[in-house]
Image (cartoon, rainbow, N blue to C red; front, side, top):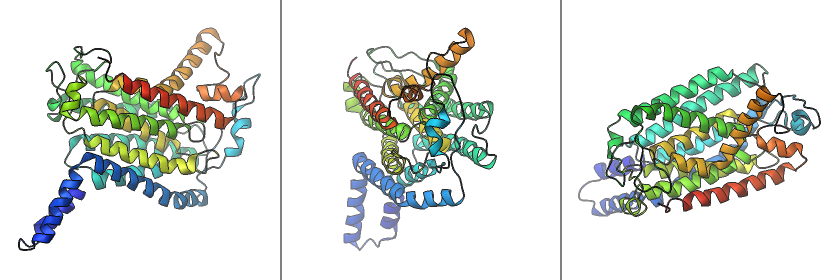
Length: 388
């Protein structure tokens, strides 16, 4: 939007007014730098989150839009309600705060004629809407389980289908060039291999569905302790901001043997906005939390991170950098499979963070340690970018 405003000013300024025209030209050059716009998007989204946070929390409390805690009892350990019962009534739908920050930073500082921007925004908005409906059902029907898993999955699959079709059929992705000279968004980029980019062809569509469903659900499962999911999401977004900047420059992409993604630089602006909004939300969500993001926030975050990974062709990097999300999701899969096949549970409770909490580890310590591990995984993931 800022580019449109600059062009509008240049259009209405009289040609004789050279001073104003010079200012407009200088502004255009400054905002042409992706680093400037990313920084401004981060700062703006942070301020939006910090300023709107108190108002949103008061509104949610006044309308009694609060969390409900499931009563799940397993022998040999305290139940979930015993551990988190004091959090009942804490406002949910705090993901709206993240959404407001991300949208503000994106709409102000992104080039809105970039198709990658709209794919990322619309996909994350659609998943956020599914999460919002889930939160609404939880509150309005006093049902802590929300909508059925089937309904949620159908919505996620539809979003993944739309993104997959874009990756397969859009002319925009034909500009993506790999180190081997191949083009398009149907290839996968693996660490440690410089000349191997498997072409999935039409299979990129189910692959996109898998990535978006997995990522959004993994972030959702991780959102069980105060500040845990948003802290890790911010770290992952930071790592992808760096990776996104590198793959959208022809010189660094060629040096690192990356696929070169023209136009993908605008995604770094969105990631900057996500980091700012995430930090602003963490201000209120840190232990002890004043507000929870709910499914509104977790599905939004997972959708944005997953879509970004697909667009810049760094899906495998997401598995490494987002390792905590992967581990949390796998702990649930292992727990369910073990109980159905063997009649025994591997963990005291899943996802994994609840297992440690049932062991008696303080919540704040679990959060801090998961953040540390996530930061280390981000460094490992970024290190693999050069290993070809």
